[in-house]
Length: 133
Image 1: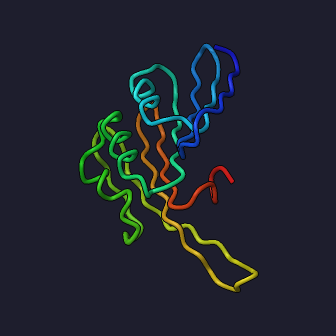
Image 2 (image 1 turned 60 degrees about the horizontal axis):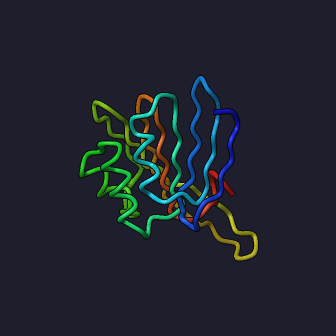
């Protein structure tokens, strides 16, 4: 496979995948592209840079066999920090803090992580602030 970088549509989805054959990175991937990574060998990190499209969250959740409560929790930004162990993956919901010097204020953003045996799914409330910005 080698090192491959592929920029696709304006989707909020980024994929990094590696295995014994190589490494690939896709940005702007549509949700259906993620389905193949749910059962592929190697390790996959899928980052979603927005919580506004619950259809994307639901699709990713179905591809990776996430519990329906996990799919409901991810876009709910009123959660407290939490950790849940579902036998095939772990869900961690965090609040990320950033300081705006211009406004002299502290902004919060929810970050949800789903850690599976060969995948990491991250869902950021705001595009690219903490993981890709």
